[in-house]
Length: 306
Image (cartoon, rainbow, N blue to C red; front, side, top):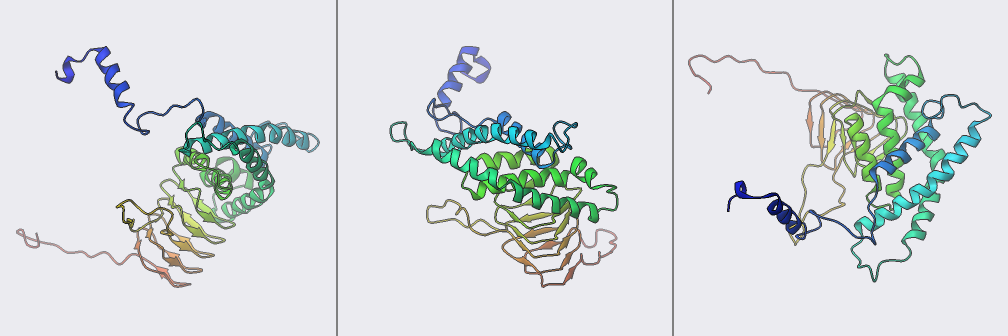
């Protein structure tokens, strides 16, 4: 029988049958609830409102009402976040229902509370990013314009939230939060990347920052920049070895222009300037200026040179 002969019942039966062939095709367990992208999106937007009150959320908030607003929002948010963190643990857990870790719920609530205490530090970093965007772009008329409109600030808000959860050992939730920003802005930052103060991504679309990147303070990059890996070594089982440092280190006060591709565990030295559309796989010394080699112009006649 060919696929053209299938009835609806045949298609249903084949889909159900193929769903039993592995976790990639089907996942269900009433003991292990899945994280909710919709609830996580609400959590991130609530955090955006708390980190930039007045710009996001209620616009009529005043200095008198702000403490009540922030306190009430965080009180609800902590419980919702703890539940999602616990679902993240369940998502990656391979234990059976009989020997599942009974401590996950308690651990999730403890991590959610600890994350809340990190918010003042996250906000301090974000305000330095706002300042970097304002002073780094002559088109920015106010600091508020960068908070409200710039994809760099939106992506970095998600990243600094996700990175803190990543450092706290939360499973899968940081990656979901990072991918939300990727979908919204075109800026792809892995939650494992460490980014210093006053970071600015001008325009941003197409920028990629890998998991093990380390970026210093006062760094500016433009659209289409890739800070990626050069190769993926395999172990004895022929599977990729995960977690190795494989992305660039970018030191303080570096500028990387649009379309540059920088690959591997190399170091871009302090105050270096990397020009647009260059391909770099070796260390760049401090203070260096790397530009694209001059284009060659040649002409061929009667098939010569082909």
